[in-house]
Image (tube, rainbow, N blue to C red):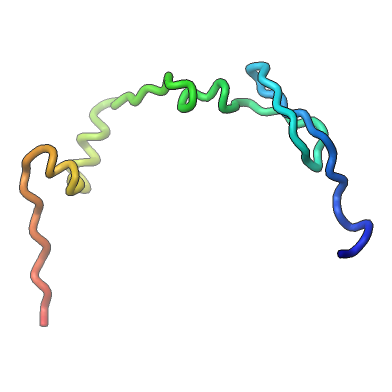
Length: 85
């Protein structure tokens, strides 16, 4: 391995906007985050799915339902077109 070409690898402190501090090693000494696992809604369980203006239904009408959704709803799947020989 060549000498004097690699960046310095130092102890690092990662600080989130919510105040959570992580200690690790990095090429940068201080890193600031806007959001982390301690405050992100997905990880805290506070994430809410909001269907604004029927977007899910619009998507389903436009692209069709998945086979799993059709199975749950009890609707028959649209048959695939016959292959030409």
